[in-house]
Length: 454
Image 1 (tube, rainbow, N blue to C red):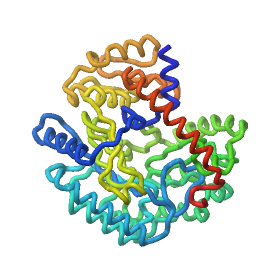
Image 2 (tube, rainbow, N blue to C red):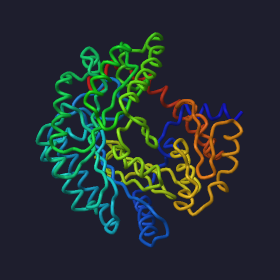
Image 3 (tube, rainbow, N blue to C red):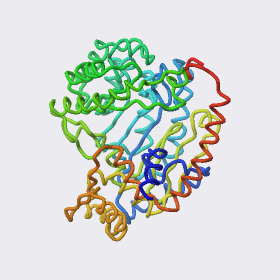
Image 4 (cartoon, rainbow, N blue to C red):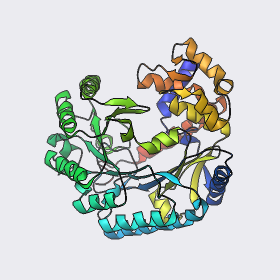
């Protein structure tokens, strides 16, 4: 019976945090800020250990990629981007007094496409962050980009402000597919020039993203893109699977993956994994392909290890252990009323469950768990561990408990053992409401084409 529930949860809940954001409720800004003040005080009093991490969200792109499932807006208006920059600066300055004595471990600019900002605008944002937060001792600064939004001036600026991990979303270099996904101009030459220039400027780590299983993508096309990327030797590599969802542009346009294409996807990823590992890439914690551990996304590693995450910008996520997980308003609401938050209250027990969910695949170390939470792992999760052991899903050497997932789906299903019965019931109720709303929206929305074109 439990397996059926876990499979159901795996289908509807793919969130980075537990409890999942489907349980969000409207929460006043001051309540959330009170949560931050409490966390900061606990750390300064040395009641708990924590690593604070700063995330800035830029929900804008130059074009709307037809595979994209994220909430972004297409613009090339310097005025609109300038107005958004002012909102980011305003939120930064409002939050600054809370964190005066806190050192941030990492900075991450994500999107969207943060490098859609001009060089001057990026410089203005970086200076605002440095003026208002204690970021002088960050161990990593990360920014997302596309090849066509990077220039020599921007790369020079990134190095000046110590951004040492550049994530470039490539997805494919097959020119037929490049056009189909709405990314005209992204050629092999353009990609290669950006990578070489970034290395010349001294960017220490480059991460590249590729997408497999796209409509009309063949195994040969996918492997050709992969081989091209491997020649450039990015320090980190991520391969993602294309997901068909009703809201994405391809599906709105009536473009669907055929059964033949779905069947070829397994071959794509099997051959890709073999080729990547033969090239020298290895897994580290929850990242699949790295040339060395220091190339990992240290922000996500820190948050998975129980660290706090402060998000700034429309749609940005924040995580206050033992208190709240919340998201800022989406772009339209963020512009109109910047004091509105959507949050999920998180108890200490749920914070520990979140930690177990994020770390059990690579191993939950008992000593570290005890140090972070001052609690005994086996006393908290004894029943869950016994359940997984009985089904041969975990290994236990006495020092750490590690999940033995055959594949990603297996992990997503059985990791739901850490969900509380109370939250499972709430998720089921919330899902039914959301599905009913979604059906009404789809019925009423008969536009064909991507949001950018509509």
